[in-house]
Image (cartoon, rainbow, N blue to C red; front, side, top):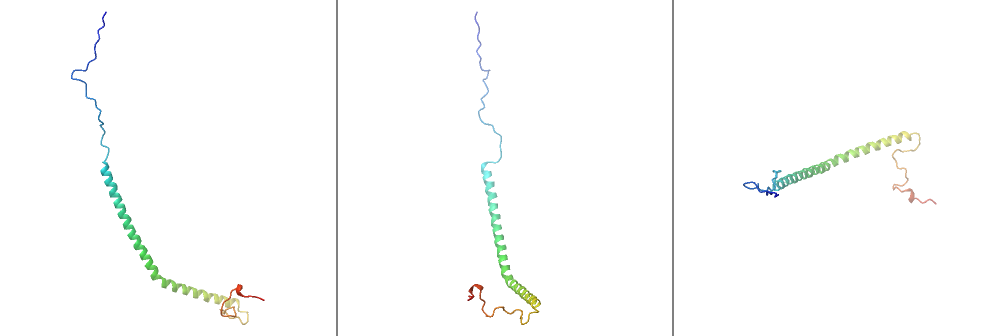
Length: 124
């Protein structure tokens, strides 16, 4: 008994070509386009920072000059307030010490024209 072997052969015309290349779909912009976009965004950001610095510097200059021009007004206002407070304090002193004979409101309580602290006075 003899067994007949049949050899497996390629189909007529041969097999299809083996597909070994990557066939990937388009997945967005190229690296050069992305780099260009990032550069443009950074340039715009630096431009805005520069404009903000100029604006901040101008506001600071305006604030300094407004303070310079307001100083005389503020000093005068402070002087008026100090005078008003001093007059009110004298009036309170007059009211409190009205029954004390020889008391002069606003006069220094020291016998010397020069103020001396308590530590500099030596008591024997």
